Image (cartoon, rainbow, N blue to C red):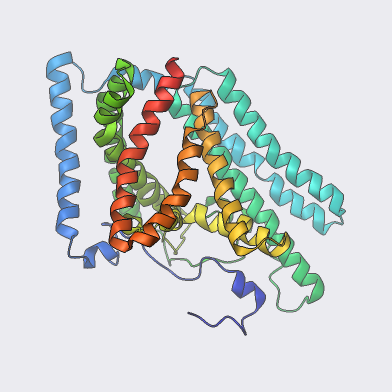
Length: 405
């Protein structure tokens, strides 16, 4: 482990420190997948996805006269102009965090700063909830807008909190501090474009934008989105609309939900985040670790979604431990409970009803972590994958039943 004793405090705070590639990035020559003995199986899966699209489209066209299921697409694009417009509006709204810092430099008192921070961040969730609950949106629009809200909230919050820490250090020792020179228009713009949720005054970077890499990523993203669309429209929605008994629906949804789980993972962490990283020349692209080898759900929480984990660790766990005085164990429990509530809020907005099934299953993971530790690593791996295979279809079935009844 690196010795941080003699490092400046700003250096100790850094989350992103070196250039790294994501594991499954087949378009990056230095990615770990190219050095893995299982590369052939991965290439086989990529080709199978291509065959799956062609075969599904052919069968659909021969039987129904169209390549894709139309109703789901119509639901996806409903109110599309407003949904697309919300993205730049949320981006512009997030600049409140930047001007907030400029006001602090101009002498804004602490009470005024506190009001601006919490009112501006709370308003995002209120407006998002209002739009979702009053518009005739499907789950795709709701998920998109809700994730926009959470992403920009975390970016705004991190920018405010990190600059608070930098300011406290600067007031004690103005020498060798990046603050307040970092409070610039360009610095905030680049921070908002980078696929990060924790603010730093500098980030690892690549030397230049690679157009061929970017286009390959766009192609992979398109293929995976089409595959996800077919999987949901042909293999998940028909089962949900059947309204079969819970156990029957759960069994039928097990494989489609697992495939959807993997596709969402690749689309989000392998394609979209790498596209934003390339646009912003961001170098540290370890957006996930080997979560598929997790021995416990605690390992999974750390490895599955690195950007969110880094935010929770920096701004919830460390905040609770160092500023609120919680013990390490209580800070960890509080962080996990906070994360669970955020997940439950997303699902509640998607379903437009409060049914804490997801919260209950996430709380159930806590004793499973203890059981996995007692049973050993191999047992823990089996237990983890049992949860991944059975959990999502169970949740999908429970929430669909709640929506119908």
